[in-house]
Amino acid sequence: MTWLITGGAGYIGAHVTRAMAGAGEHVVVLDDLSAGVPARLPADIELVQGSSLDGELLKRVLAEHAVTGVVHLAARKQVGESVDRPTRYYQENVGGLATLLEAAAGAGVRRFLFSSSAAVYGNPDVDLITEDTPCAPVNPYGETKLAGEWLVRAAGRAHGMATVCLRYFNVAGSAAPELADTGVFNVVPMVFDRLTRDESPRIFGDDYPTPDGTCIRDYIHVSDLAEAHLAAARRLATDTAGGDLTVNIGRGEGVSVRELITLIGEVSGDTRLPLVEPRRPGDAPRAVASAARAAAELGWSARRGVREMVESAWEGWLLHHPETSAR
Image (cartoon, rainbow, N blue to C red):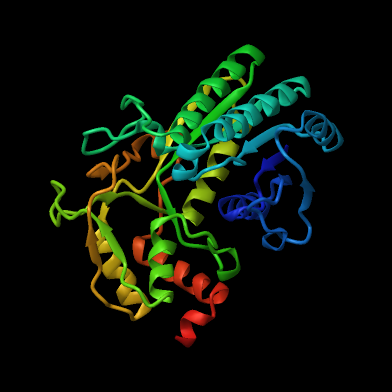
């Protein structure tokens, strides 16, 4: 098979690209490079610069490379930005997906893997979030991911396309320093950024109904996430019935924000106490995945722990922010 990986030069995308190519899969990457970095990709991987909104480009790439499966990761993904610019998020996340699905169906592609998010669940009051937990997203980003899942399944039914939707929980870490997350949007790099600026980390609320009063989340190493994509792609390669599957990708274990910051202090050597600030609207006390379906359906489970995530992320942060070690 030949896989088209959209967004394959991004933080998560580059890990997925390397995992699939390293396992012998033939891949080609499409990325508009708004967040992607070409240097993240191995030299023998072809990179096509372009957007999933460009239908003519998609048709040409799918035909020229005889693509038989698509892994769609390209998307806008910042919650706050989605609140400020909802039309942009719907246009790019849903409109781009619709354009890609139409081109894929026209090219005879019958395997489609969609990058979704735990944001589709909103803030459910449950100990473990299963794939059957009702979806009630609380921001436009989550809404676009849920609408994307609906669209993928509908296109799959209409065109005999086997589909998998992977709902990521909180992604961290890196397989190598040069592949590290260079954005400051997720909790781990946000804490690193505060330390680099000689400021204390922040905790938003310490009065939640949890053991230490701070929110609990499920963190997944990006290398484990990449391996989950490989497992899903291989499941799709053998699926001749055109079925659909939706799977949580998490460790099934919760870590509190205070525990995470303490661990970051141990790894970085900067153990200053965090500042406690008021709660942020919409933060759930607990969001932890049930990973049972991933094990049963994909034969996959996470192998890396939170310390490994933090250590690898810190190594990458120091590479990209040398001023940190000089502070």
